[in-house]
Image (cartoon, rainbow, N blue to C red):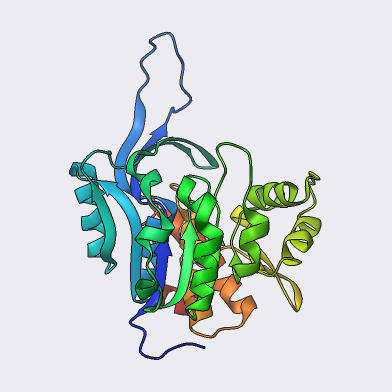
Length: 315
């Protein structure tokens, strides 16, 4: 049961860092070959950081739980979040660990990611997300599951505590760099919305069942049996989702793609904003697909995130 006195619509838990996005001739050639790139931008990043920024832009009262270093990059992360209206009271600064940094080798149709975790992996749900903080939130979204050992180990307990505190919940695991895809059986019963892309959907289902599949419908069915509805990002095709009424599809918006970094996280922010506004599942999916498309209009995950007015006009 939701408490009208809660002062946060959304509490996001996970990774916040900076991305150095390189565009142009980005396929490395070793042997000390020097290459010239078309662009280089340093921007706010991390799946959780981008979701929080997108939610703030859409008018949600949003707070972020994350770890950064007590360094210049950490100061930039905090300043960028503040500029987007995000409560950073639970963004902890470490004097002995650097802020996380990802180097993105970006092409219009794909990207490669090289990440130094740094302070990102210092997050501990039991310490950093107290019950008093959960009591302030309507919804808890967890991201960066496989990047943060504390989430992989104790994330199920966090989600269960969030539910017990009266919050609804969502999970975007992102990719598992270790290719283990573990922890889902314990977590999914406490998740209301699962937000993977197609590749992640297939990998999560295989990790859950031990049976690899390339059939998204089958994978979604296997995951749905554990509880959550599923909103899947489908790149240029838009989105596909599954709930108690069956399968839904929503087209993306044709745009001139500059950079796809963070599009899935902007998708998450718009889906959650629509769901918290009480909109039907299919409309949540449409708004998310449009928001994901709009975010690709500029470099980085936050520069071109959707506004309420844009979604109102385009959905």
